[in-house]
Amino acid sequence: MSHALVHPRTSPGTAVTDRPVRLILVGAGGRGSTYAAYAAGTGRAEIVAVAEPDPRRAADARARHPGAVFHEDWQRLVEDPPPADAVIIATQDSDHVQPAVHFADLGYHILLEKPMATSERDTRRIAAAVRRSGVMLAVCHVLRYTPYTSGVKEIVDSGRLGEIVSVEHLEPVGWWHQAHSYVRGNWRREDQASPMLLAKSSHDLDWISYIVGRPVAKVSSFGGLRHFRPENRPPTATDNCLDCPVEQSCPYSAKRLYLSCLGDPDRERWPLAAVTGARTREGVEQALRDGPYGRCVYACDNDVVDHQVVILEYEGGTTASFTMAAFTPFTHRKTRIFGTRGSLEGDGVRVTVTDFVTGEEETHVLGLDGPDAGSGHGGGDERLMDAFLDALVSGDPTHILSDPATSLESHLVAWAAERSRHHGTVETLTV
Image (cartoon, rainbow, N blue to C red):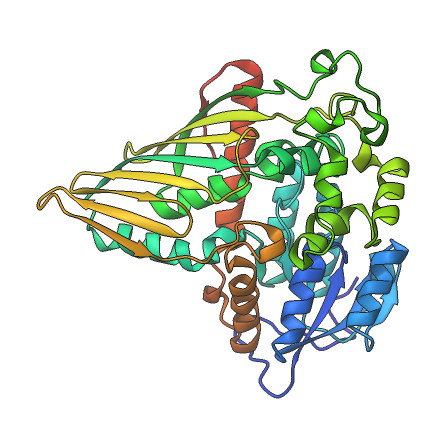
């Protein structure tokens, strides 16, 4: 493809001020639809083209964006590029690299769902394509953009805690969320998606580095798939929850989880929408019987970990520990930051700061409730999209906190951790 483009594009330093930003949506699943709907709802952007192969999702997107051009395959949009400024790429993880490279080469700015790609080679390919084309790339590390993160970062950077010595960070995935997404769902297998650290916890590795403000030097990791295995299946359990005699006493009952979503708009939007478009008991049960989400969690083809610990050493000697645990309530991340003059303890909404000089504690409400995708990740989804639109409108890439270089580092940390987990090594990070 030539860079003598058949569509006007916005390059860094060029502002879009006389019209709404024109966006292409590639992948109209849960994440892509959320970003596109918010962008269009602000009045600052319009969706001009959509690529989505799933008929139900395509129909939903058509109803929300009736003026857009629709294709099943994103390659049609590459062959006949529409007039647009940027593209939202929210396909499955393993399908990120090809559209990202092609749209970058065509000159479109990119909002790319995390992880960037499922291999180090492909992630570097995307970063190189962006540099080569001179376009802006925002990776959807939404935790960087939340009001809570902004507040924590301000406290750390103010020096109130002194020099940061160590960080302790927990991601409580939630027992039912693990079963939904990482045992029965699209991210259950590394060969079809990516390791858990990329699929779920690249947010957290990125977040810790953002707060510490230094590059990672060394990584080690331990963990595995402990519980969701065939040998832990109750003797009388059946392959599908609807017929299972132990369903009522099972913590991971699909029947209990998805039927309880009915009548709750947020939970119907997620996780139920991933299972079915039906909003009746009969429709949900039919989807559980016919599809993957009704399967016994001990009889799936999953292989991603259900618990993992990562130990990090940053340049300058600051250390951090990160724990990903499936066997928790579904709630916000928990963080403790230990400095030489004070400490901070946060739960995703509130932080308590202890001053070592006065001994006093101060509690601040920094964040919004709602840790999940259905509620916008505590404001992160909206603020990410606002930042991306600001960058497009102004031509100033500094609005983007999750640029290719910083996002690449968090991905390299995840792969280093996986090498450590598999081989029992301490990995030295080379960006």
